[in-house]
Length: 118
Image 1 (cartoon, rainbow, N blue to C red):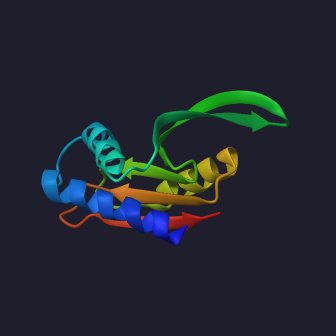
Image 2 (cartoon, rainbow, N blue to C red):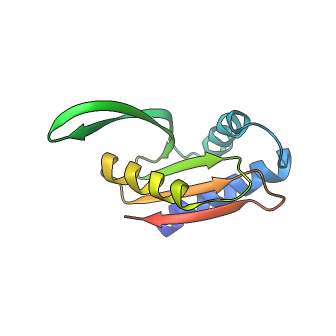
């Protein structure tokens, strides 16, 4: 899994290098899958996951990216990560049954990345 997350991070750094900070999140959500595909990684964008409560479906959430069916990648363009961003990713991991997520902040001069394991 570390090799896969390393490849994802490398692709994200390349996108950040080419585009720089300052764009809307949607720009990075378009560019990163393109870069991942160049490296022959499979990417699902806006993958829907059902949210359950007491075994009843109560909603649907869309994940920014799921890479190789194993890693959730959530993209942000915020001043700083806060606890709610990490809590959100942990909730997505639980709801999806996946174990590893990457939180990426493209708004900074240097790409900020937080790896979360559930």
